[in-house]
Length: 293
Length: 289
Image (cartoon, rainbow over all chains, first blue to last red; front, side, top):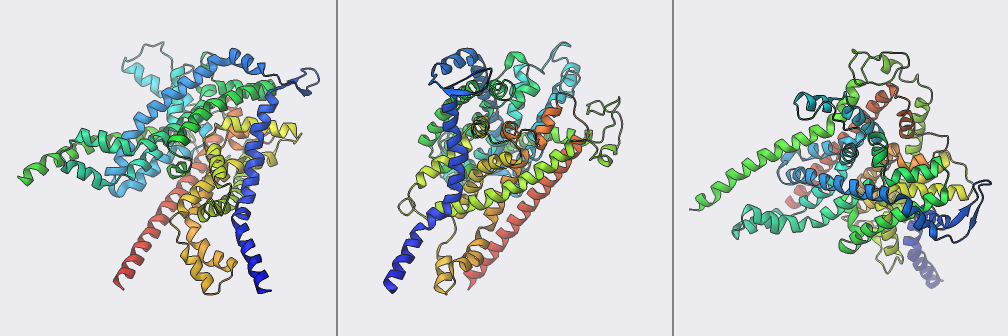
């Protein structure tokens, strides 16, 4: 009797991790993984434009079709997201370095200030940049007064505005992982390097940079992928000539109700992102991302 | 000789830090620009018939604060966003914390599929939001599920769960499992142990996860735009209004949200500092005895 009881107890104990994980796992499978599979399946269907009913036709050529129609917008996305990410890495590294090594008692203050853009809505932020970058806005007024640009110079509607907006909106995503990586560096290592007569540059190149490479990867991932799928910056700040793939996907789904086409483009975008995601997982490991959030 | 070696680098360090400090303040100034603009122009008077925000200064007014609820649709969308964020936070915090407990406490042998869950969480955080939004729309459409509050809640919860799990897990890694063993050795039942030992220890991590879930949900635009249907959360409403002109009240709501976020953040920093100093005091006491 007691034996049975204890074996029952042991069985119950064995089930604990699964029971703890079950609700979240069901949610994630049903509303994250399953929709991705459905998306892939949907993209292979053919829908009648008259009745709106869809049938599975294994129409693999849709990927070719969508790619040939919209590869330009894809490359726009890749280019703008890439440029914005590089700008963010360059802008964020010095401040992350400063906060990690020299901010002293003001550390929490600086970290809080880095997060400040998140305290106002993403859409409102972008709209305000639309006003600031407009022809009568403060940025162009100052540039014109300094005679740095001609009177017919425009920012709004150009790819410059789109990249500037993305660089602003995603900067915290870049700065925080870099800070976390730099913060973790054991300061004694720098002293040791100095004792071994490594100069300032050598210490930076041989000690600091190699140790924060995982952080740079995380920063890249957390900035580049959201920027790749972004369409708010493009719609608010950009124009017709710099359309990004996010805009196309949004229009296919919400304006044209072309679900197979939109699904196919989303699948291609997901494929591109997966390259980055898998490379990160391979190089740095999946668990580490949580440490950079 | 020793002094000669150490003196110059120190001076150089000071010099470098001065430039870095200046740069850091400048960058923070850049980050703050839109917020300052929003707060200032929420007090701006408006000329013409239908009130719209404009960035020419027409004089100071508190009119938009007095008439904060006068715009049909905007107030509803704001409360919808708050309700949505609260509900999504509750779901995501509970589910995410339970999952984090399972992931931290149990190795891959006691918990098969752990690696798979890890990868799913990672993918969920890293995947472009537009793909998730589009795929959720596809799911709801193929199930003929009408879009509205439920679809918004289901979607917000799914991306918040991953963040909560990851944040709570990062905070749980230092948790000493022997505390729970001690409690059960002293005769505490599992639920009692959880309520009296586990929960107080993990609360700061859970709070951090909950705040993150709330912020993510309140500010979500991309996924919401796909699954909202006729129920428009605040960011989706504002985005729709950009085409026809934004009423000044949007900046009033924006200012409220900003202040609320600021208060939460400052509180969490203060609480964390208090907790840390308490820990230090406790450690000191222990080491003395």
